[in-house]
Image 1 (cartoon, rainbow, N blue to C red):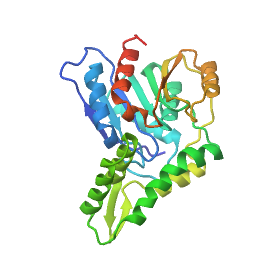
Image 2: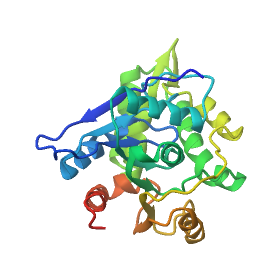
Image 3: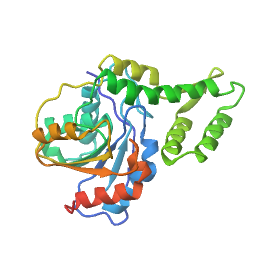
Length: 279
C-alpha cells in the first residue's frame, strides 16, 4: 500500500486561539482545495484556528494512483496528520469525503475533537439511484464543456469564456463554473481536465468509494444539510443517530448540495458556534 503525500493550503489567523486544535477541510468527489480558498480563510478568521485544506489523492494538485478508494484516502489523511504533528483535529467534510473522515474517527478516535459533515451521511450511499441522480450529473455537466470549446482557442481564452459564463449564473453555478475553469488544461491541441474525471467516475461505478457501514462514534458531529436533501433524509439521519448519539442536525433553507458556498456567512457562523459549544 503506497500512500500519497497530499497537497494542501494552510491558513493561520493573526490572533490564533492558544491550544486550539486545527481544522482539516476535505472536498468532495471531483473537487479540490482551490475551491475552498475563501471559505477556508473565513473559517480561519472566525474560529481563530489554523485551517488546512487538502487535495485528496487523484484530485487537484495531489498525485494520482491506479489504487484509489475511501480506505486509501483515509490512510493518506492519517499520514498527513502524522507528518504535520497534528495530534487532534476538527474535520469539516463535504459529500463523499465524509466517509473518509468517519473512517479516521473510528480508527483513531483520540485524534478527533469534533466533525462537521455537509449534506451527506457518514457512509456513501452506493446505490444506482444515488449514482444517477447525485453523482453522474456533475460528471456529465463538466464533460459537456469540453465539447463546447473551440479547439482553436488558447487555454487562457477558454478559461475566460467559462469565467464569463460564471458571472451570469447563480451562486452555485458560479462556483461550479469557476471549478471547471480551474480544472481545465490543454495538451497536444486538445482540452482536457487536470483531474481524471473518467477514472474517478469509473472507480465510483466499480464501488471504489463504497465502504461497508460499521462502528459507532461518541464524537460530537454536526450534520448540515440543504432542506429536503435527497442525500441526508430524515430517515437516514435517524439511522445515523443510532450509531452516533451525539450527532446534531441543522437545515439550511433555499440551498443545494453546495450550501457552504451559497450561504457562506451563515455556514461559517454555524461552524464557529458549534466549535465554541454554543450549538
